[in-house]
Length: 427
Image (cartoon, rainbow, N blue to C red; front, side, top):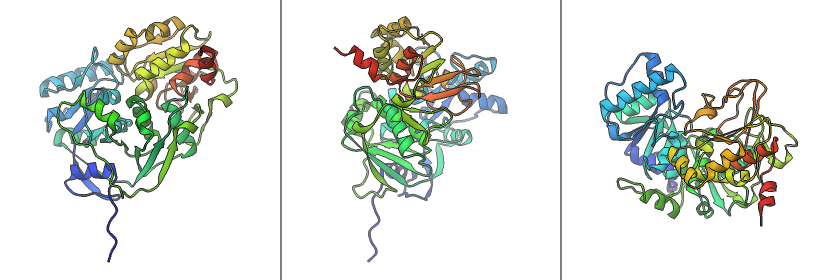
């Protein structure tokens, strides 16, 4: 008798629902898409191609966010946003985040507003669309043409990769953040091409939604297709406060088949940095970087612009000053986060220390505006990428770290471990 087939991972079960049939690694499936996330860059592309969208499958399944270049820094950006506003009005797109009170980076707004729910499928043309996997959904970046197909037909297709699983155990030590978890994986485990990643385990509950979203976002930089999290009590409480429709959380089958399964012990993770021009196999403990001087420090992006990230920076910067010759730029990931940071006094601490706090946008992370690097600049950033030329000049160097490490480095004028400053503040 042939052995019974193994069970399904979370992403296999979600995509099977969307395809209307069971799917496994290697299958090509056509999926019903629950959310298609469009950006200001979508309309920049359409304007350049002199094309427009003539119909949409379901306006309520579209999320439209202006985030990459907001406020518009050029006439081309302004024209793209004008086209996007006309599109939203024409088709009645109610999940629309324009410049203003509801502004923010799409990946953060999706989970902040529960635009996608557990068990659903989301696609977006931005490469960090996997960030939505924090919501126990299947979220993936697609080409802009695939995004337009999803918006106009309600469907997308893909070939499913095998799934690997990380069982999270323990809890992070003081001064260690979610970005350090990613940098640990990037350095120790390296490339995850051709895989989906599933995160769960007994230590998951020790991570906040924002910390999980950082890990989901940065899974893109491990080259994985999907980053899907289990739905624990913490996530279900987060969703229940925001959901506007029913949802069904998805768990893996007990006998789910994985390409590999490893334990990720949080208590053993150090404060880490990635050296310039890459992250995979290119990380080290922050304390071992020596006296590496910097000219710019950046906190923000979809990866590390949460309220918790800004609080961590403010904790380090309180009663301290940014070093002479260093520029510190802080970009909250949404205006809701900006407002709450204002109420809690974090922005005052940052400003008093010498930081410039911007409105919510992708901004400096993508090298678009509000902090572009020049030749010879050395930047330490908590944003999402550090390849040559990412944030501006290809003659700049970009080091990557957590928000606390960025803040401490801005004070020291060189890359350093923030735990030394935090220890000075301890009673």
